[in-house]
Amino acid sequence: MLVTAFGAFLRFFRLGEPHAVVFDETFYIKDAYALLTFGVERVALGNEKNPIADRMIIAGDLDFWKKCPAVEDCAEYVAHPPLGKWMIAAGEWLFGMNPFGWRFAGALVGALSILILARVARRMTRSTMLGCLAGLLLAMDGLHFVLSRNALLDIFLMFWVLAAFACLVVDRDQARQRLSDWYERSLPTPTGPGLGLRPWRLAAGACLGAACAVKWSGVFFLIAFAVMSLLWDAGARRALGLREPYRGVVLRDLTGALGALTLAPSVVHMASWTGWFVKAEGWGRNWEQATSAGPAFFVFDSLRSWLSYQIQVLSFHTGMEKTHPYQSEPWQWPLLQRPVSFYYPSSPPPTGCGADKCSSAVLGVGTPALWYLAVLALLAIVAWYVASRDWRAGAVLLAYGAGWLPWFYYAIADNRTMYLFYMAPIVPFMVLAIVLAAGLILGPADAPPVRRAAGAAVVGASALVVLINFGWLYPVLSAETITYSQWWARMLMRSWV
Image (cartoon, rainbow, N blue to C red; front, side):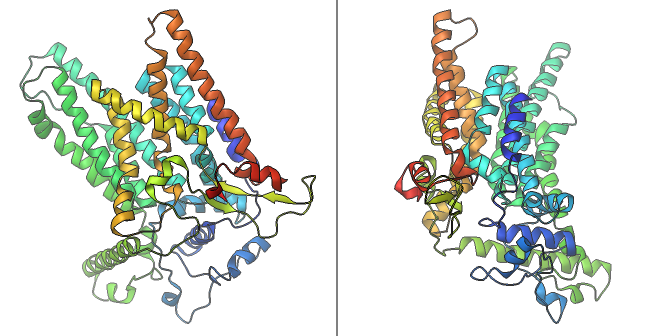
């Protein structure tokens, strides 16, 4: 709880600064407010080159919608599902259409994700110290910090993916306990028993549906985690010595898994589109046609229109080749070669830093010490998994691969425009890799005291380096006003500028 409180303080302190519409907030805060006001996204005044609506919002004028002769003419085409924008809208509803309001939900889920990671790391390692280390490292990651303090969708995608993973880890423990109890009191069978209702796996499915309802890239984790959960079931049955563990999974677990990890995500995802289904103003809604021939046709035609819309979204994502000065390729992401400048005003503050030239910036970049440690840790985890087939190493590697490797296809086959913050959903798994490696360095509890002391020194020093590195970068992550020379000193690579 102390680690979570520390991370929450960092994320909520000066949350309303900069008092501006930052980077892609220009899309999501207006979409969120439209959902809150109209139930669907709506076209606002201006465009990217002339952001009239952004200036009106900062000035407190909320009548920034484009005037249209018919309501359907103002429908806005959006490429992402609605849930993340509904979460942003909750903050706008609570605190108003202002920077604190539209950033509130991101800061909240950013803080909660620290708690979730600490708990799941503790469950995976059975070590409170390693659990707290995981939470502390996530609290000090620059990319996680910046995304928690800006109204973009990726922090919500990260949250639901992490929550789903945590639910599946709990489900794994409960399933193995049920199998163990059955084995002790019943005669063994070749396939083993059914495990009954598994609410944690159902919760994981709901979370994965929520991830897909934030961004379609959540589907990569849905597929990977469904496979992982079934493999865990097979491993549990095999560990008991059952003669037909895989047949047992097919006969006893597959139906429930399909319900939890296929049906539940579909229901949650479709529910997020409720506003689009019940309103006439949604993009491609075809309301008049849908309501022309009774309830049955309404359902059929609405689904047809919705599927047509999703096909358009898919073509948008696969054909998005527009260049951007801050775009980067997936193989550049682990080494932070090209971060994203979220905020650097063309007219930086002239005073307030004690020098002639001042800077105020928000740079979307991870904490280098943590990310470079994660590269080393992942290599160690690969070796550990090859040597021992430890389920924890396999889970971390699978989650990392699900969040990173698919982007190679889009980079090579589609030449898609991509950014470093697409790594947001796998930052918790980078931290888990470091924590698992730290556990190997510390050694078992009964290791010689000298070994434990040396391991503790290495792990503690590494955490301290991450803390110092984060503190050094903090001014350019949080829009503090500093001198230009101080800003320049924090640009680790010239590609950061």
